[in-house]
Image (cartoon, rainbow, N blue to C red):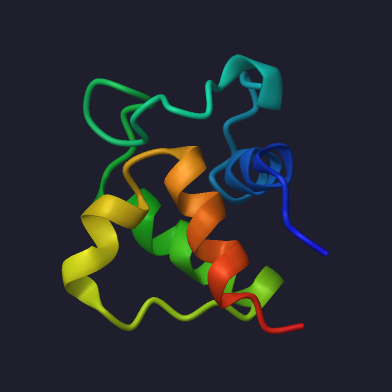
Length: 85
């Protein structure tokens, strides 16, 4: 069973306590960092831990993180490709 972008958005909102946002507020292609949602490196670490806990996803190649975390769509694709259920 594939994880949807809405599930990833909900996990992002919950893990980072973004209480003023709903999944519908976040476009799948909105950048997660800088000009997009404005997340920072601490948020990235918290999100990595939350995704590892929820989906048993490991982010082993640090060189790929910028691309993986570019937006919800990329992140969802990565989770689905590496999902261990």
